[in-house]
Length: 366
Image (cartoon, rainbow, N blue to C red; front, side, top):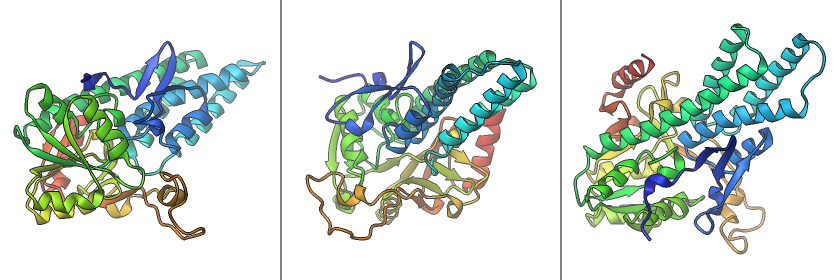
């Protein structure tokens, strides 16, 4: 049965609990799990139980609150208020550091932690006690959550102005509802278009080695009744050559000041192919993912993951020789020259990206 795509929420705050969909179990099982402490939050982010730059940021903001709350409940210090304050301060900064270091590439993780760090620092300066500071951290997490949901909806509306009814759209990895608070980034205009009868046909790259396109994008699009066809990554050239693709829409985990965008491994190859075939390549980038402090993609730290994801993870038995060397970067960087337009919740930016991104971010800060 066709389901409303906007009801898919990978991160939930419910009854004072942080709950996520365990995305490692999809598409076979839709299971929700609670994250209660630092170790569980870090493990969920590292093991991709929660993934997608915006969703990671939201989870981290709530996660810092629940982890700090748990530490204080488990070991509330006795004695003088000054001693209690020192222990609370140490617990906060240790927890923030642990969660902030869980994954290196997606800027939303550190961005969300930095927002909570500012809340903590401001509250301390104002003389607030630990309970008041915890309340302020929860309020900020809820604000980050609501902002992301609205940003995704607005990106959908902006992105839909670039697309026409009946288009064939290629996407890579998963930048849908599962990667955000709601709607998605690059899938948001597809969902809005579906509701308005646009009749898109989406070709979803499987996205090796973690198969986010096969397990997640194909699952959520089919769940919503969108016409979707799953292809292997190395089939992108073929569908383009056959004239089946009118636009490429992808997400982004970090965009540098010059418009270079880091996204799931394989995205850059799709961008190069799209340019060769004269197909517009649109990168959907929440302003929370734009990092003006990073001058170019050359400065983006690319996460490298375990080789077992390539050789063993999705097979009944290992599919590579025992002991073989592996190289498993989780992301690559698409140079700005291959990006037709950057879609944000604040508007669409076109080359040259440096001035446009700066303008968008200045507007965001106001």
